[in-house]
Image (cartoon, rainbow, N blue to C red):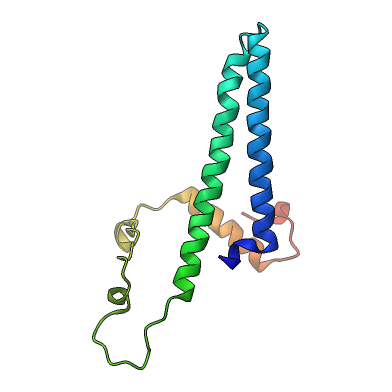
Length: 141
């Protein structure tokens, strides 16, 4: 819990309170304008409290994430010297979430169709690399 009272977190808490109060105040202002006859303000009167709710939601999500990370950091680690047959993933209480790997399929070497424009551009780049002081207009090809 102490980790939520660092200077950075205090700034986040203050920003959340200021933004929420400000957005709710702007919503109330739009309600008073709408009651005075400005029909467009009814839309803004609904919009500002939604913004305030979003600020509170993001703040709460970040607090929960920080507390979870703190709990994981404070949890006793598995003894490295212990003789266990379990894999590192099996010792964690939560299942590991892995992203699928996508592999681009490239045709085998000899079957590839040669792109002449690409080959010419690669030759041009290799010539520029071999001649560092040369200008593009000096290219003989």
